Length: 410
Image 1 (tube, rainbow, N blue to C red):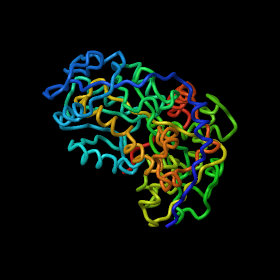
Image 2: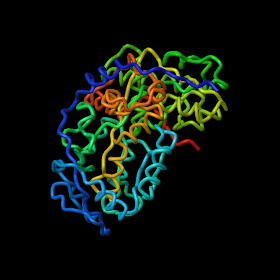
Image 3: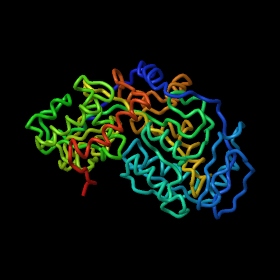
Image 4: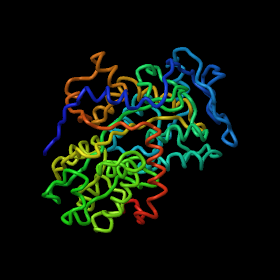
């Protein structure tokens, strides 16, 4: 097995901090447990942070939690009384989520109800909208979405504020100052290549247009709803030398060419489709590609290629649904993810945890975990405004310019 180990370049953190300064920071604040619908649990009053207690027509909290350290014993008791956490769009082979979910269940004895692991960021927001009046098992408690989807969810009133105990260690440019959404991890887009099926490994987006890659190239998601797919289209446009919204348009033209050449496979690719050769070249995040290579254990070997042209980084963010049926379990999930244990869980899945800088300074990241993190050197970290502008161009233009529907893998 060829295991790709890429050294993390510390300079990327400064690029990250500088280029993601899209919003300001705030002081670390936490909320005590809040009352869950149809559930009685030991808890204290938290006037400024109460989650909805009835599903129909419930208004979400509009202010940040009151200052004060969270009482973890009370939060754990309230979460356990709810008995369940409902997640959405968390594939087990994405950023080590499979292990994180199992560890959370074992640590707190709380069931995790997993909805549609293959959903995109847009579909996560739609799941909240569709279940505003439904406190049942189809209503997600928490979401993990692309950076630009956080402000959108806040504007629509789909999420509620909560600040974890480690709030101050999340970079200001990667969190909403009022606590509605907060960065969790980041990585760089790459080509995930099945070397058994593709002997001549492509190095740049331009290479993918060559006839030798006929019927081989796929996106990780639907560019109408998936953050990864949208950014992949934009990255292809950036590789042409275009910038901003022009790059988004250039990305659409690029995929039109790729589709007309017969090289584009219009399905939502994943590790399975790469492994069996159905989509032997997948544009995806470095962390997914490397973890897939480890999990496949040489059957087949995968190679992770980070193009030099159009090298684009992306941040994902967490948030709690404004209509969460299990608000205390949701808060406990956030506390777990943003603890050292949770952050190291993501790092073990080859993702750069959002608290990387603070944890590095504190010496809490083991050397072997640090060494395996893929480099983000030379990657461009776009602002929220840039992502939103590119997303608008791509989601509105894909049906008419590219003209092909990306379907779930069979």
